[in-house]
Length: 271
Image (tube, rainbow, N blue to C red):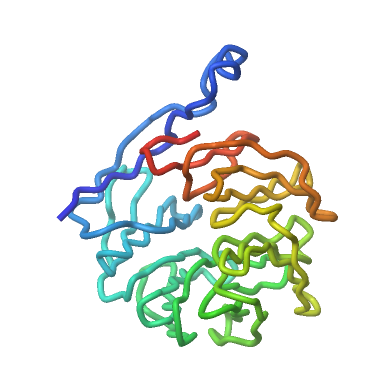
């Protein structure tokens, strides 16, 4: 059994040249919230801002922890899941969607009391979850190559967007018309039109193992982390050309923090 803790606002590690130009670090460690005894690794996080709850997918423990951020403690743990990976709160339907790798299902919980209200069978390896706010849809990457389009009202899959291989990190652009998808087994970034469900692809410039992705709406670009070689790449959201590329350490998670990309690496630090 392993004792896990969620770190709120971790300090970023920047190159010396950047640190010298910055009066204070972009993020500092404010609190640690113990998750208690959790077997195996945790995976994705979700947030219910209405109730200030952090949702933690505990893949190795087959559970979902619900963290009360105001109180700084675990509110409850939901057991009986099947290798949960992606998790997201949907404000329009006040519900929580949990994607499970083990049985390929998407479990749906009521936002208020977290009781089960739906079960959607996708068949295999349900993974990342994103909310298409413009169309009031939930997108779930799964299987050998697809994004499931789910109606959060009827709790049913209404369409599939086909891909060449299993989707990893993906993001919906700021206009809500396109979704950019990391497809590492095909060594590409897929671009899907959410209105027509048509897809295209962008080359990865010879880099591989592209898993994390984030959107930089202000700069109209999206950010992708590759593990081989370890690279952070910024690509134009308009035509896909590479705007910038940076060599980094190994990484498996990417977010934007105060207008800067923050990359979580395997060495227990954030760059």
